[in-house]
Image (cartoon, rainbow, N blue to C red):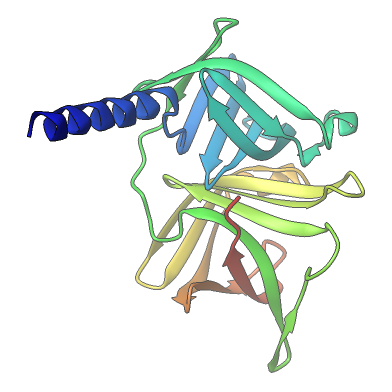
Length: 231
């Protein structure tokens, strides 16, 4: 009996220490310097950091990440400010607590308070409606359009890590309720005039896929299918 109790205590302690070493980064973190805002998103093993001002997009980078023993490693899939970083690993020494992140350099990041929603996760567009048919897209090669949604924030990126190309990004806050998906745009690399706009779409989860339809930011009708893309 004593051996069983001791074994349980040791197993519990090991599990506790492992959890302490590898905290869950999932969420949105922010920092601000004057008019410059930076948000850092983590969900499903993917990370994206974006710098923007009230009416001016600046830059973004991100990719799959791992975090252990105070070290964050990001396998960079896109970086529109430094294309040479694509394919490289960008590392940060930082600690994580309930309030946010703190880099060894002293830079701190506040964790945004948000309500988890059914769409939270890393998504990749896999289909698009053309006429009455659903056409599969981005099924080969490294070109892809992905979207991160977590704690009420969203960001999409059109990228090709293999070719080291970046076609655009946009992001902000979102809600999803009663079949309606609404975005409030905080930054848009292709057109700063879109900042502040609210866009509402029909949205539904069907067999694990996200069906997204309505009018694009340009007013064009769209019907897209997104699939989860956990890293």
